[in-house]
Image (cartoon, rainbow, N blue to C red; front, side):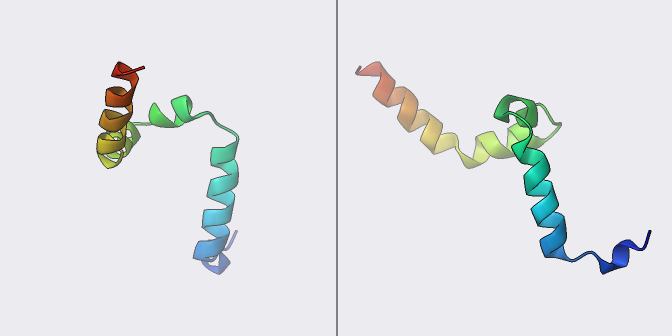
Length: 55
């Protein structure tokens, strides 16, 4: 197969469809993903946790 014809858009479309088939928990179990995602959303997690303390 000649993969040189695949565009970035083709790759991203197919990757997104594959990811849609999996749960967030499964995706976070992929090595390196948890670290990147948790760092990116760190402040959001802290804000959410703080809000839960006042419920």
